[in-house]
Every structure is written in structure tokens, then in C-alpha cells.
Length: 394
Image 1: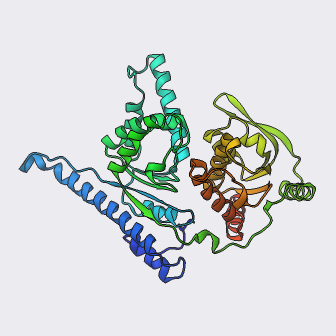
Image 2: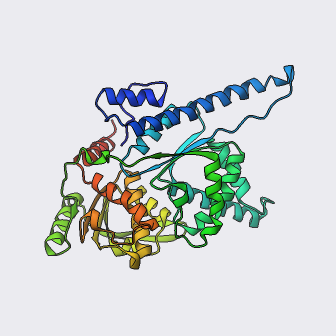
Image 3: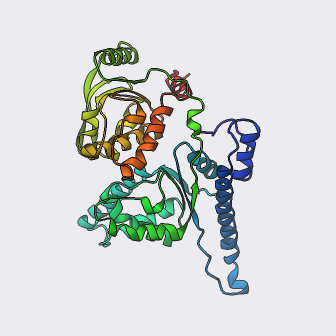
């Protein structure tokens, strides 16, 4: 839910939230009010720290400087559709800091890996003497943004898990303040992951540097405005295939479809069918191939509409494909794409894996997002946006 336009400006998150409830834009929710108040606490501490920092610059006139206490961030976790992202976006708009960054966690980690690789290459080229790439990468990122907002904090990749503790220890040492949303509590991050014991120091660090707040289970507000249109087709079969082909013809608008490829870091991402700003893949081509976050981001950067054919029922026997599908839907949602897909069953039945696994936790979010992306509101917003950007420039 994006609330950036047409909202009265207020000085606090709680005041803005109350304005939305009073105007009927959102329903009043006690758990959301608690999160809003906690976000205001972070803003207040940031403002007080900035004032103290300015005052300390004159400390040489009166007394020696004193160390400034670090600002404790916020880690907000809870069920899907509970307004976590909406509240964090309010915080991001209101926090009076120029050097701030709001980013999906997967995109952030792709950026981190790119920077680490560049730092290692610079060491090989002799342009730096730093053997360890993490300290200079963390310093540069902290210089660029000292308030960082993560949406959908989730760790499934071992490469991410292995560097998070050292990376964030360095970021926090530079005064970075973290505000994050997640579907899972810190103790459930990277659950069942390979070598998880090496990840546990990061959980301890996260709990020390942020206030952990639960926005407890309740109403999924994404479901309130659903008015479904046929963009999620089931069950698989001849009739569904015909509907998918008809949808593709309507999207292509006469533009000849052809295979293409996206060049990414010296390799090629194969796109089986593309026409204009639309791409069509099978589930197998996207999720049963070794694609990662940066691949899906590259696809989202190139295309506005994504069609996915033949999504099967998922379980532990397709664990890698399930992880990629979750990551793909996160990317499509975060980039506000139009998604049209065919699947064996409805979203609620797509995952049959064992409860309590990381995938089971995360698939609740996937189901909610698949539903929201079928809504008339979602598709109307997509259509309005693309009508604006497709207008000829005068």
C-alpha cells in the first residue's frame, strides 16, 4: 500500500496515521498505533542526536566532548497485510534526514555483493591495500545513508547469511540506524539454513541494535479492496492455455513476439518470449534455473508485465524452485509489475510443504501478494502509471 500522494503532512507518524483513520483511508488498529508510536520514538532520538551533535561541535569552548549514544532502530515483524510497509513508508518520508535509503532487502544485498566484488578486484589491481572488503564497503554505504529502511527482511541465501554479522557490525559502528519489516521474528531468520550456527551472532546483534516489535496477527487489509480480474488462471489445462495465449495477444497489441536476452555482468538471461514491455516465461525457465535476486531485478527493470506459465504445487521436493518463486514474487510486487500467471491450484494451496520451515513462513507473504496483484486497485494503479509514462513528451 503506497500512500505518497494526497496526504496531509503531519509532524509524526502517529498523527499521520490518525489522519488516515479519521478520513476513512485505513481502519483504526491498535497494533498499528503501537508501531507508529515506536517509529516516532526513533525519529525523536534521531532528532535529539543531531541536535547533540551540533552542540558538541562547540564543546571545545566549554567542556570536553561526550560520546553520543547510538540510536536504537526498529525491527517490525508480523503477519502479511498488517500495514508494516505502509507505516515504514510514513517513517521514511517523515524522518528529517537527507542521507537515508529505503530498499527491499534482496536489492540491498545484491548491491552489497557487487561492492564487495569491486573491492576485491581493486585489491587485485593494486588500487587499494585493503585485504578485507567489508570495512570499506560498510564505510562507503554508511556515508551514503545513515538511516536505512528495509522492506521484507528475509535471509535465505548462505552467501548473505555468512556476511551479515560482520557487515552490520561495521554499519552500526558508523552510526547507521536500521528500521526493518519482516514476516518472521529475528530468531526465525535463516531457519533451517546451512551452517546456521555461523549466522546466530547476527541475530544477537540485531536484537541489541533494534527494538523488536510484533504487529500481532489480525486482519489482512490487502483483502479489503479485492475485485478480482482474470490474471491468475487455474487449473492447468487446455482451456487455461488458451486464456493465457489470448491474454498475451492482448498485451502484445500486435507487436511481434520474439526471444531475447538480458546481459547481466557478462552473462545472458534468456527471455523465451518478449513483446515491447512484456515478457513471458514458463515456471521452469524462471524458477528451476539457477536465477538469483539480481536476475529477477534485471527482468523487472526491463519489463513492466510478466507472464508465468504452469506454476505447479510446491513442496520440499522443489525447495530451490520454491525459494526462487518467493523471491520472484517479492521482486514483481516491490517493482509494482503487472503479473499474469497460470497455476495448478489457487494461491492458498500452492505450497504443500511442512509447516514451520522458512519456506512455509515466507509463502504466507507470497500468497497475500499474489492475491493483491489480482485486485482491481493494483491493476488500475499499474494502468494509470503506465498511461502517464507512455504519453508523448510535448
